[in-house]
Image (cartoon, rainbow, N blue to C red; front, side):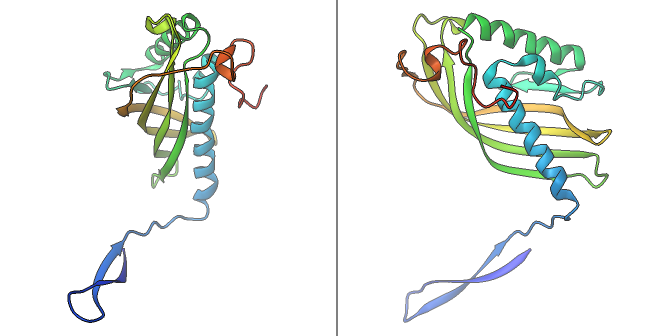
Length: 201
């Protein structure tokens, strides 16, 4: 911990002294590459999710781990490789019935901690974005639902490659749905121009 002194206005002349304690995070230089790799895994996950590339998203999971799991929106975790595959099969059905679009969310405030064994890690992110709701959600007109959410994920390093061993997504807050201009941007025809950030395109 770092103990810094900060000055605040007092009742009398001048200022009084107040001690403010800030946490410090010691990061071994050797961990930096691992942290960057984990950031890329999470970013690739988000890009695949937006593009509906659910076969590719499965490649980001450690399906060799019998305890691999995924939990969305407060639902009980689905545990095991087959359960994770089933989750993304359901996502695929919603994606297709919804006009080949689900949403887009930006990652913020990353916090990554590598375990002492160097083979496991945990990461948390806040996300801000939109879920694009249409026929797959029972709506005739496509609308966007803004939301604030969190990811609290676990990762495992296997043969030098970091993969997801747990995905846990929780909604912090949602806002009223808003209309979308059907004649502008990506939402106009997402099946013709998939989510634009996949490097393979």
